[in-house]
Amino acid sequence: MRKNLIMSLFEYLKGVYEAWIDYPQREGAVIANKYRIQRFLGIGSYGLTYICLDADSGQEVVLKQAKPSKGAVGRDLLYREINVLERLRHPSIQKYLASFEYKNKLYMVTEHVKGQTVEDLIFERGAVFSEKEALRFVRRLMEILSYVHEQGFVHLDIRIPNVILDGDQIHLIDFGLARRLGEPIRTDFGSDEKTTLSRTAEVSNDLYAVGHFILFMLYSGYESSNSESESNLGWEDELNISPMTKHMLRKLLQIDPPYRNTQQFVRDLDLWLYQ
Ligand SMILES: Nc1ncnc2c1ncn2[C@@H]1O[C@H](COP(=O)(O)OP(=O)(O)OP(=O)(O)O)[C@@H](O)[C@H]1O
Image (cartoon, rainbow, N blue to C red; front, side, top):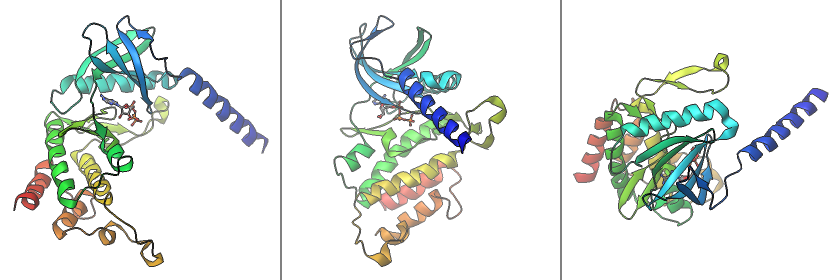
């Protein structure tokens, strides 16, 4: 009992300390004599992200700082993101611009992708995607993802908040979890002894996430009847979709034998879209 109380107090104090050292820098602050903070964008698991004005180019850029409370692990993850983004050059992938150390902190500068995330479109703007619109959108997303895979990387964080629509341009952001194909994925970033290497980065991980991405888009148009008997139904019963879309989703979500590569899925998508 006493031990539990001490543990809770310790966790509480740890939380207060982390919130204090991770407190975002103020608007107007200038970092490295070059980047003036315009707006705090958000705090992720391993980084703090700002929109800044680059004094040299006059451009708005995104500045990501490793989260101080994550110590070496935060820096390691930001280094990894830098290493991946440095190697990718695609008009639909946030462009890497620079990285540097300033006052003992690691920073990464990338292009600021304007527009709205698919998450905001659905949940804030109330956007509704028909089956055809969702699949057309995902077909375009697959062009970006195929490029990432061809370069030997797996994104590993394909989710609706990481895809931005700007006019009719789709952009993929947040490569913080990306790994080289076949690289072990660390699931526990604790001390070295505790680190577990449970699985490797494979294309199938991204395709599985694409399956969930499609479900989010399709559910944007779903209206629940709220009847008791239907409350436990799964997506296959709730969504009114074609057998071919069901077939693709079952393979993406690994309910049926999964697609072996991106091309197999894209072939099915094209069959559905253009026949
Ligand atoms: N290049 C970019 N252009 C526009 N917005 C961006 C860019 N990079 C990140 N953002 C936005 O900044 C916010 C914070 O991003 P960040 O990657 O630090 O954390 P997160 O994605 O919220 O969390 P996590 O990293 O844990 O998934 C998010 O809302 C994200 O959409």
